[in-house]
Structure formats: structure tokens, C-alpha cells
Image 1 (cartoon, each protein chain N blue to C red):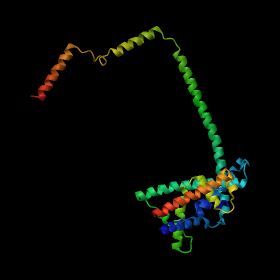
Image 2 (image 1 turned 90 degrees about the horizontal axis):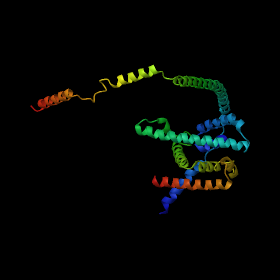
Image 3 (image 1 turned 60 degrees about the vertical axis):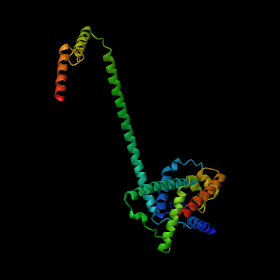
Length: 133
Length: 163
């Protein structure tokens, strides 16, 4: 019964031994050269990105300020225009326009005269006769 | 030391060299922000550990993605190449398999347990230095190493029982 357990324990020991057996690495001869190249590259890209960020940041701030200014001016203009008193002639015209708009035939569909009701009934009967001759 | 620290985590020479370079680039970039609250060497090893753990996380994601690729039928033959180190191909293959099993088991450990255990396995790190790197106490490091060993043993035992 003990054999499988012993086998498993041995496997575990051997597997953990892999970590102890890892050799101590020495950096390859080109390690330093590659490192200096990477540091140089990162230094250049960092300085380039920094100037880009500075100019880009200034442009962004300027654009946002300009948009805010335009919004402010336009909202002020709208506010002052809405403050003008409505003249009596204008009000009369507006009321007339409204009454024209809401008394048109398109919006009077709910007014059903006797003629239209009887016409509809005749139409319905004709349809039923066609379906059940 | 930085190279070997990274090597303990990734178990691959090329990746360890790339990571060590990343570490030194980061050190060069952030040297001004070093506040001298710890020793410079501790700070550098902390960066090495962070970079190595990040690399392992990336590899885990990549592995997950490659399993999906394998399921849908896109196989990368380079992934299955045996290691070139070792005395003969059979031993190399067995060693690679064991290393893979160990790495899988290590990857299931929490980061602090994994770090404490791997640093303890490397010559040159005392528990006090590991505690400085992990920004914790020596007794906490001892506990982390003990728990890591127990968890690894359990996971490997489960693996070998099932296979």
C-alpha cells in the first residue's frame, strides 16, 4: 500500500529539485550593449513624448477655452434675445397661425359627419358581400 | 543577481535576460523617484520581482489564449519544441516536463507565497531581505514560505495521483 505514496513523494521531491538545480546564469556578453541601446531608445522616446505632451497639452487647453468662450457668448445672446417683449401684432399673428394649424382637415379626423359615416357603412357591406357571395 | 532572480521566476534564460533589461531600464527611468526608504538593492530586487510576476501573468493569459487557439484548430508548432539543454533529448524532455509541472503548480500560488518561496530558494537572500522586498515582517515571510511549501506539495501530490 505504501508504494504508490512513496512513488508520488519521490516524484514531488524530484520536481521540487528542479528549482534547486537551476544554474546560476551569467549575463551574455551582449547584455550590456543591448541594455545601453534600450536605455538610449527609452530616453529619446521619453523626451520626445514629453515635448509632445507639453505642446499637445497647451493646444488642448486653448481649444477647450475657445469652446467655452463660444458657448458663453452664444448662451448670453440667446438669453438677451428671449428677454425682448413680444409685440401685440406679433402675438396676434402667432395666435392666428396656431388656430390655422389646429383647424386644418388633417387634424379634424375625429369629426365624423353623417355623410362620411354612411359612406363607410356602405363600403363595409360591399366588402362583406365580396367575401361571402 | 537580478538576472538570476528573474530566472527563478520564469525558468527561461531568454525571458530572464529580457526581464533583467526591463528592470535596469526601469531603474534608470525611476532613479529620481527613489526615496531611499530602503536599500537601493532592495528597491531594484522589488522591481525585478514585480516585473517577473507581471511576465508570469502575461504568460498565463497567453497560455489561456493558446489553449483556445488549439481548441479551434490553430496550433503554434513552436510551443511544443523541446528544450535544448540537458544531456540527451530524453532527459531534456523529462526535465522540461518536470519544470512545466512545477511552474504550473507555482502559478497557482498567491503572488506573495510564490515570491517568498522562490527568493528563499535563491542563494543570497536572507529572510530579512525577503521581508524588506515584500515590505513585511520576517515572521510573515517564514509563514509564507511554509504555506507555499505545503501548497506546492499538495498540488504536486494531487497532480501525480491523478496522472
